[in-house]
Length: 401
Image 1: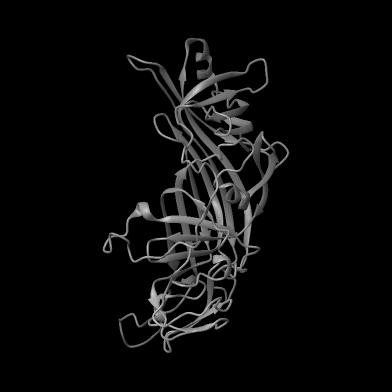
Image 2: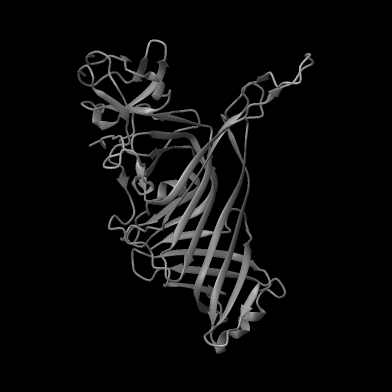
């Protein structure tokens, strides 16, 4: 069933951040919209998120007998978006996490070993998504969304988190209004009280009609003078006068651990020289691994105010880890002094079905940034690394087990 839209629930004057919901659905290509088909939108459980639209307004300055600015005109537009949520494995080994499809869209290939692991390795193929953001009464839709940054972070005493950042070609929004008249099955042009609150390429439902299979309707045109919107596909049922019209998000499909049990930040470790006679493992206190993708688009082409293509230019994987050292392992203080190159395996979690392993097959360690030797307690070491590819597209591997 679709989620009923509201004007703020019990707090009509306050939009609460904790009530916002994010979801995503893959597009078949940039510029190709999921026409009235949001039924398979997948939910991401977020802690915080934002999407900001940018629209350039260049100033026109010519030789007129005035010192005033007389005109601005439309330039390039775009969207940046970001969210942070708990890292949520499925709870069953071999199943995808809640952001599995998003990792796949972010230039990673999925390889599934049933009952064992879900593995993600770089394949450099970026896929576009439609991102939905439910802000209680207003729906925001980021079109042609592309991921350009992933950051896995953990900290003892807190749960592991994942931050995802990206861009979009443009954003559309839908508010709440009412039908102005009665309409019948297959009608596509719908008169409403205020077409100004429903933008083209937003997705709507009617209080009595959420579309076939609760998939919603895509708004393909609007006329703010006549107060009409054009929807696709046509109505699935008859709709009466004064029926509420508003954004649709559906009951988002929640992947990952639906019980809401993220990975414990106290259960992390890092292993050096994996598989060699010199292998050793240290418990981690905190750390992060960042996959940063440099992406260009074609908005500089004349006549394009939003991008219709993106280009993957490079990928850079870096990390920083803080560890506790034992007496037997203080030799790690020498790691990185000569830019040591080794493989690293970071293990987050220790229960089957709720473990994430990040493997860096060839990491170049930087000199330790700090060695905190307190009066009481364990010696703490912080170091960073840069992942290197050996054969190309193999500098990082992410397993959910």
